[in-house]
Amino acid sequence: MNYDFDERLAFSHSQRERTDEKTIMKMLRGCVSVETTEIEENRKGIDYIATLGGGAKIGIDAKARDAGCSKYWKYDEPEFALEVWSVKPRGLFNTPPEQAKKGWTLDDAKETEYILFTFDPKDSIDAYLLPFQLLRVALLDNGRNWWNIYRHETQTSFRGPSGWESECLFVPASTVTYAIYEVSKTQIAPCTKP
Image 1: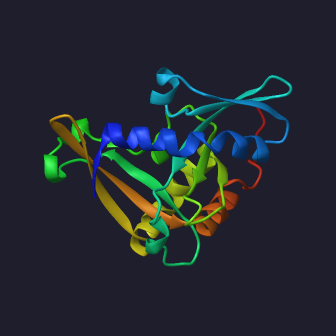
Image 2: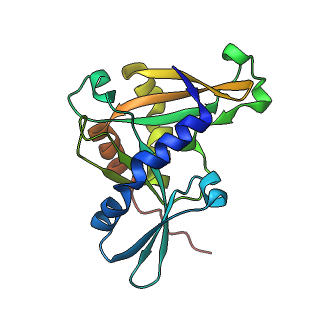
């Protein structure tokens, strides 16, 4: 698929801003406000700042899917587009490996706390608010297996005369949420004497 970067940014803002604020307030108990971020936070992957009654501020990255995406769902449930490469090495633009950039889902420098996954209502009225770091670890632990099972696609994006390729893995919501549950528990580390 080919995308114009600026057009996609405009789509994501117009599509989600209409309903995301109400959805976030509904999902985060005690939330008193949700504000759209400025470009600086947006570049860090934070689209909204939700403020709780006690004053805590929570960064949320919103991921809205295009209308019609459900025609690709093979398991009769929403799929999350988990970006593995933001700038894929080699490929159509022969991007050197040193200029490649891992996808947002694997970015351990990303400062957001939650990811809000939404869909066009014709595809699904469900919304998912997932903890980012646990989502990242779930992909790290399961990505190789998911890659062999689920659909993955390369997208070509253009900004002016230049372009790049990104790549996403499309994983059913129940698979991802179960993987997050699995990585959120472990056995207590043994206590060692100093």
